[in-house]
Image 1: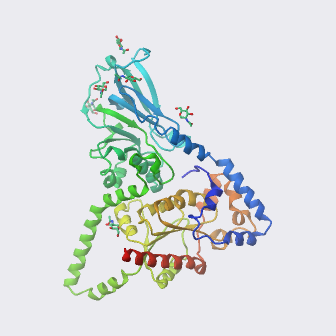
Image 2: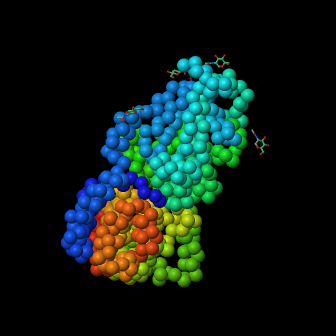
Length: 493
Ligand SMILES: *[C@@H]1O[C@H](CO)[C@@H](O)[C@H](O)[C@H]1NC(C)=O
Ligand SMILES: *[C@@H]1O[C@H](CO)[C@@H](O)[C@H](O)[C@H]1NC(C)=O
Ligand SMILES: *[C@@H]1O[C@H](CO)[C@@H](O)[C@H](O)[C@H]1NC(C)=O
Ligand SMILES: *[C@@H]1O[C@H](CO)[C@@H](O)[C@H](O)[C@H]1NC(C)=O
Ligand SMILES: *[C@@H]1O[C@H](CO)[C@@H](O)[C@H](O)[C@H]1NC(C)=O
Ligand SMILES: *[C@@H]1O[C@H](CO)[C@@H](O)[C@H](O)[C@H]1NC(C)=O
C-alpha cells in the first residue's frame, strides 16, 4: 500500500467518534519525551497535512456538482468522466463491440455531428486504464490500457458480433495491487458494487488482468452483482457486443460507500448486507457439516460433557484476535488471550491466510462482539463485523495516519464502536533499538513525513508490539461492558 490522501489529519484526530476511547495519553507521551517537543509536535502535524493534502473538500464539492456528468449519455456517443483524482470512467452507448487483439472497444455510430473523421472512420478516440488508483502512476503503468473508439458505422461492416449480449458491460481490471485484501476490497469489490449495483445484476463483468484465483475467491459476492458469467477480456478473442459499456469503476473514499453519490442512497451497510447474503449459503453448509460431526460423536457418547461446557461458553461475548506473523506481531498475545478470558470473553484467535475462505472469516467475525488486531491489511475484515460491535485497532508507532484513514474512519461509517489503541513507545519493539529521546520513538510524525518509504522501513516492516496488560485491559473491560450492554438492549427489543 502506498501513500494516498494525507488528508484532514488533524481534523481526524479531533473527531469525537473516532476518539471515543481516547484518553489524554498524547500528553503523557509528550512529557515522556520532553516538554520542548509539544509545540513542535503541533506544527509538524499541520505541515504534514499541507504537504500531502489533496484538498478533499474541493474534491467532494466537485464530485457533487458534477455528479451528473455522464449520467445521461446519448445513443451513439462516448462520455468520459476524468474529474476524480482516484479513477476515470467512460460510458459508451449504442452499438458496442470488443476487439481484444487490439485492446479496443468500438462504438459504431451513424451519428457524426461534426462530420470530422479520419481514414479509419474514427470520430472519437479515448484511452483508459480501468483501475481505481489513478494518482499512483507507477502502478497504473502495469494496468492494461483500453482504446475506446467511436467510428462511422459503415467502417465497421466487417466487424461482426460473435456473442451478442442484451445487457450492459462493466469493464475493470483486477491487476495492480490485487493480492492484498485491503486493495481487493478498496480498489476492486467496493468500486464494483458502487458502479454496478443499480443494474440489478443485469450486467456482464468484463475483466482485464484476470486471475482465476480472484474469481474463485469472490465468486459468491460476484454472483450477487451479475447474473452472467464473466468475460476475460484478453483470454477471449471473440467479439462481444453490448448495448452499453461502462469502462472503469467509480470509487468514493477508503473502504466505504457514500450514499449521497449512490442511486437509491445505498450505503456501506447495504454493501455489508450483500456480503451477508453472499456468504450465507456457504456458511449454512459449513454449519450443517459441523452439526453432523457433533451428532456422530454424540452417538458415541464422547462429547456430551464438552457439549454442555460449550453451551455455557457460548453465552459469553466473543472476542476475536486477528493475528499477524512476520511484523506487527503482538508478542505477548497469549497473555492478552488469558486476560480477555478472565474479563469474561470467549476468545478466538484467527490467522487469515491468502487462501482462507472469506466465508469462513465472515462466519467467525459476524458472530463476534469484539475484533482486535494490529494495524495492517487484515483490518479490512472489520467489514465483516456487525454494526454496533467493537473494533479495537492496535496502532504501532508511526502508523496513526494510515490506521485511522484506512480502517478507523471507515469502521465508524459502518457503525462499529471503534477504539484506536495508540501504543506507547515502551510497548514498541523499537524501544529497545533506539535511544529513548530519539525522534523515531518520541515524534514519529517527523519521521513519517519524510516519505512513505521511511514509514514502511522503520515502522511497518520491523515493529512488533508488547501490550501493557493494565493499559490495554482498560479497553477490553470497556469493550466487555459495552458488549453486555448492547446484548441486553437487543434482548429488550
Ligand atoms: C464540472 O465539470 C466541468 C467540466 O466537465 C468543469 O469545467 C467544472 O469546473 C466542474 N465543476 C466544478 C464545480 O468543479
Ligand atoms: C446524436 O448525438 C447528439 C449529441 O452528440 C445527441 O444529442 C443526439 O440525440 C444523437 N442522435 C441520435 C439519433 O442518437
Ligand atoms: C442506438 O444506436 C444503435 C446503433 O448505433 C441502434 O442499433 C440502436 O437501435 C439505438 N438505440 C436506440 C434506443 O436508439
Ligand atoms: C460514413 O462514411 C461513409 C463512407 O465514407 C460516408 O458516406 C458517410 O457520410 C459517413 N457518415 C457519417 C455520418 O459521417
Ligand atoms: C480465436 O482464437 C482461436 C485459436 O486461438 C482461433 O481458432 C479462432 O479463429 C479465433 N477467433 C477469432 C474470432 O479470431
Ligand atoms: C450474521 O449474524 C446475524 C446476527 O446474528 C444473523 O442474523 C445472520 O444470519 C448472520 N449471517 C450469516 C451469513 O451467517
